[in-house]
Amino acid sequence: MAAPSSSKEKFFKRVINPYLSEVMKHPQAIEMRERVLHIRDVQGRKKTGSVEARLEAVEQEIFKFQGMVEHGLSANHLMIMEFTRDHKVDDRSMKDIVFTFNEQINFLQSQIYDLQNQVFEYEARFKAMRLAASCRTQETRASSYDGEPLPWKSEYKFASTSSSPPSPKKET
Image 1 (spheres, rainbow, N blue to C red):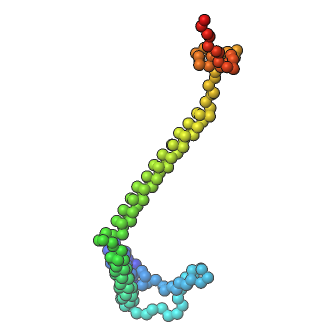
Image 2: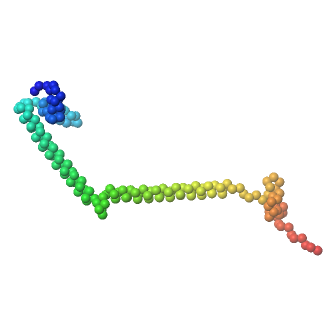
Image 3: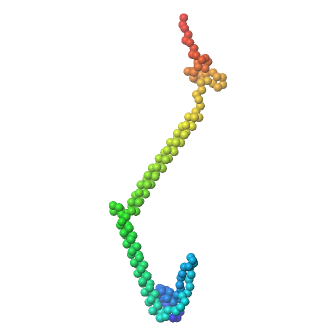
């Protein structure tokens, strides 16, 4: 066969007859040994016959494999349909049920998070109250400068000067 020179012949070779390059290619054997891929040319007789006969054989092989793939796809589709039919509850798909569960889980987790934040806030308040109570100064009754009672605290006036309250004066 002569080399294609016009664009029509190139178009025919690439688009109309895409298997032609495979037919013209020398056959090779592919093997996997010890985790290494080995590709070697097939030794022996080369195929005989015309290009059209070899092309027809390749097309028949392709149609056979295409039928096997289509059969596998239809079986896969039937298995998926059966799986989805078996996993429906109350005419709702499992996807919707799982989505509803996820929404409920998110709602409950947000409530737990809010309660944890509330607990932390209360703990911080109680800690601040405890620290405020422990840092509070004692109420003083007398001046630290001279020990005398503070003038604005009249109820403690007599307690610091004597140990007993004064006796009431008698009128004569």
